[in-house]
Length: 197
Image 1 (spheres, one colour):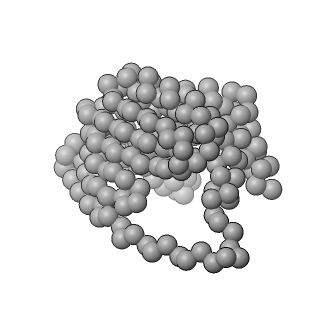
Image 2 (tube, rainbow, N blue to C red; image 1 turned 120 degrees about the vertical axis):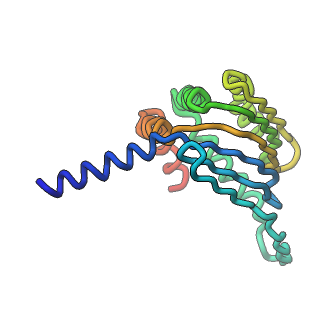
């Protein structure tokens, strides 16, 4: 009986802490290099933390030997496998619903996001753009400014984000759990595993 009470008390404490709003201020850009700053405020400003993210030093590219196979086809294969996971019935709609619920769960004070992406293959980039393009319209529901630019020629991923939001972690735990346990997500996961097998 005592163990049950302790476990219940710890669980209640965790839920209580997750229910406390968290203020996030984010300024990030780039992939190579990746740099910026993240500010976290908790317990209504009593706890404040700033995390600088320095630019990583670029690693020198290894010399390609004549007998080595370039990595680009493998990367394209992984991208195609990921896109194949998006095809099961209902998964795209479930992703849009998750994004909509996340946008509604976030109290946006300021958010500007710019993304430039490409997979190196026009067809694959077009499919990815068809999935992500409508997110710009969904973002307007939360007074955010999101701009997604496809690059149909080169494999690229660049982004810039500047925002200040308030979130309640407990709501995101619930949304993530509902998404991961939904039948469309489970079907997509099985499809992805089938492509890797």
